Image (tube, rainbow, N blue to C red; front, side, top):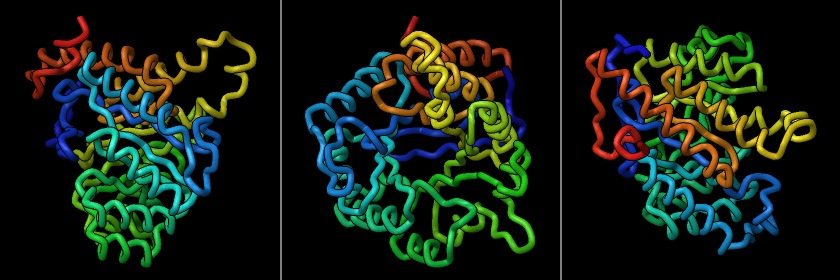
Length: 306
């Protein structure tokens, strides 16, 4: 267990606290919905989906939050503007939690977050994400829209090691740093995603979480589940429990390195991931007392799960 010397920033996004010293706040768990090939989606371009199944998945995550004390954010993924806007409207009606506006296309993300702001969801909408390909047009659009919260994807193609994640945040000659890009875009709350590429790189991303918090004091985390999803042998050669257990285990590694949030993959994995992450939070919180750290919330997993 450890304590960061750098003062740690804590953001409040629609009632969800992210950041701080390990042991102060529970890890925020982020499950993805409407992602590519999600079985509840019948038409990914038009945004047609099984509403009953989607609501059940979201309500299950709420139930697990009540049991463990781990807050949640919904990662809302869409292939088109039409689809993503429909998904956002649905999620906003089902839960009061914040959500990521997530798409591979900047144009889709911008259109969808514009819609979210127009319908009064500005405080809950988190742009996902600003990365090393960010353009002046994207920066200007975010500023003009008044977007307040964004993920910064700290992937550095010229240095894939943990220190490279820090470099891309700072920037260098000829490369605008992501923190400066976010500042120009008017972003007030930045969540640093330390970029997982494959299963072995989960350790690099976890180490980068610690480096980011040491240098900048900003909320940081990553999405280890993205790599586990590409690990085909874990599904083919092991039991049916191996994949969800691996997702939970990868989240645990990040939490032990100080992660404030974890994108744990498909929202259906919540049943497996939540108890593991809550256990880790409780253990860290209990031991953090030796470093003079106390939990800042009454419903911390330490008080909920034992």
